[in-house]
Length: 176
Length: 451
Image (tube, rainbow over all chains, first blue to last red; front, side, top):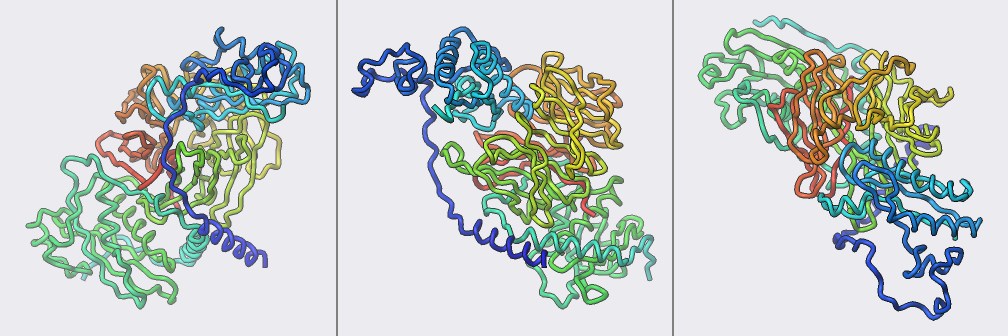
């Protein structure tokens, strides 16, 4: 009886999988590294102060540090370099001012070295940002660290330019 | 008249095992892999002076229709792929004996063949399945080295041919073959499109019969075979976070065995198949823990260190665990007792040694190795001679996995911007490349010998 059900379930699964048509999508050009966007902006942001890190509208305001959500790292390192500190501080201010906001800190590495070690390294990069947020009094319940290691690169060439862009922590808002 | 030196007859338990194997094949056949997931194996380098052998086409005395690819052809391909044999092409054979008395040694000697394999396929003795009867003969002495009747479950002739290959290999090389094995690997398609598909595929060691075990839009990595070859443990990001899944290949049943906060990675089966060593970061940084596969007892923490501790590999007797740690700065391989005591550093040569895979009763340890930051290669540490041998020449080689007989190391590499698999013999002389028609292939894991 049980075996028959299981068999039926497998047949259905197989049918479903077989039914999945495959789409062939050409590989798009790699994204530009944080391009400085032109200064055109929506009407509503006219009186918006880009340094007001408590205002959710600044998350989408290219003039505000809050719109920057990627911290880059050196090879095999996980310390947040000085030039990225202001970005992390801006998000710390936002999260303090908006207790219902939630972020996932996604840690990533380049493709070099073993995959499981890179999971650990990616987590360290997420944790570095986590520690700064915590030191800025952001409650831990607002933050989660998830490491993807080398599994989710933004750039796929095997060269230093690409590797730089893949060694990163992304601040991903799951609630604003 | 000939007297076989060794004749193994069909026993009830063999048939029972074969029956179970057929069940496995039937169930897996319900999830055929995408056509592009089939591996094609190319030989890059073979051994100079490989052994000349002739595997003569087997007689087909079964009531079943003969398959398109004959048993002898499969055996020849296996032996050739090992790099240690130079099987004669069928068209060059001037004679087609199928029984030892028909073998005219003089003419094979003239063809410069050292060994001849002859045989036939008949219906199984109880009308169930088939039987491969085969004989390995030494052309120079005229002696029969091996005679066997191999029972084969219905539809399982290829696997039977792999077992014959194993026996021939063992008789001539002195160590068991690893042809009747399977490999697991991950195929990724749609790369860079934002619609990546990750498939965990299981195939015969010669690349045939690929079957997709699980398909996901999120990463899959680190497949690990249970010691009985029945189950795979792997890491899945299907939920957006890493989890460790154990999947039964007979039933397809999946179970999440670890979903702690943080990393759940690098599963490794204990030799008795009861426990998994894993890497969990629930304590703040990745440490080695041991969990019960059936989830009945609480996880036990083995390492307690702020560094990254991952990629556990059990010693053959289950008394020790090797693992990667960067507690000394760069990743190196360490070893500890199975309870976490007596941690000692194992690798000293090279700046980077990670992801250990063990063979030959732990004498050989394959690792991802680098002496700088740019080239990551597969190296073998011989723990007896304390010699290090760098086996691969890529820049991004990773994920070494030993064949169960220790003869070859399977690993992942990049070639022209694509992920490919490669295999190299432990002495570095034989090289193979394993490619899929589309997408990246990575994370290979060689199964234990399937009985």
